[in-house]
Image (cartoon, rainbow, N blue to C red; front, side):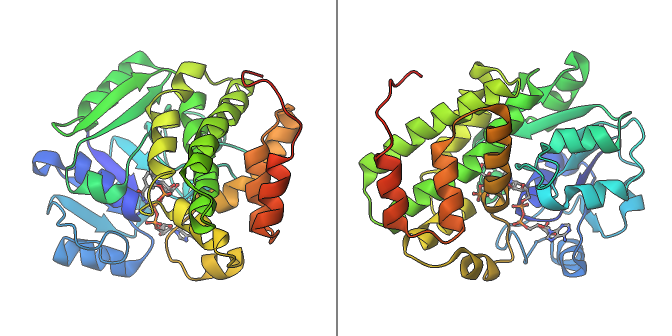
Length: 325
Ligand SMILES: NC(=O)c1ccc[n+]([C@@H]2O[C@H](COP(=O)([O-])OP(=O)(O)OC[C@H]3O[C@@H](n4cnc5c(N)ncnc54)[C@H](O)[C@@H]3O)[C@@H](O)[C@H]2O)c1
Ligand SMILES: O=P(O)(O)OC[C@H](O)CO
């Protein structure tokens, strides 16, 4: 199966490296001409994945039509830009494997829902899990969820992408796999705030556990399965992203916890922190589904400029409740 990758950020590049194992040719579409130049001439993506030697079998392009020859497309464009790129692409009946993690502002759609709307003929799959791009690109051991409703396609994709250090676990729960990845980005901002404000490790563990509870409530309300949310794409990714400054979402939270405004922190970056865009949409989607998500609401308040101590006080002052509710 000839693979094309849409999106030349850190994760698209790392997935191109996965797909190019054994020097199998892979096409990588990148928006930035300097990324195309750097991948093709130096076999490195200096803008988004500096310091990792890439397979020469990866050929980059910024012409979307160059991906026409590919039999399956890994879609790794950030959620808020995905519609713009997918609209320009002739997909036909080729499988789209969604690898971005977020919810679209305005429509409140998950990325696979955007793909289905724009390309109803194309079967969709979701690849998600605890995956820092640098580690994957360097070949460090990693495991992911590969979700697809079609058993044959799921098995074919899982076989095609798996390797000695990259394990793919199949699931038929596309929605559950997507929701875990989108929600954990918001919760990672909260855990970064705990770090930045010096609130301690007990607070972080509490946020991970209660954040997982709200991720599960929302995921089940949207049709996902609890066991998917407890797997690699949910709990697995939540634990990874909530415990390391390698996470862009966590490090955004650290800045917020230190009292810096969100606008200033986001203006400094070329890389994406999906949780910042997802948080307000998730709050709306949760309200529409009648699901309580207090940690998500707290992250929204912090992004909107509320002082850290006031937000923490109001989270802790909520009426006491049973843990399982
Ligand atoms: N980096 C990781 O470790 C990692 C791992 C798993 C999933 N993801 C997810 O993958 C997705 C892509 O993240 P990334 O880390 O590859 O990105 P990145 O932060 O490395 O790079 C930013 C990306 O955004 C693109 N971009 C910026 N403005 C754009 C526009 N106007 N239109 C289209 N594209 C635009 C850039 O071309 C670039 O590909 C995100 O949803 C992220 O959550 C990232
Ligand atoms: O750096 P982050 O916060 O975007 O997280 C990257 C991946 O999603 C981790 O699985």
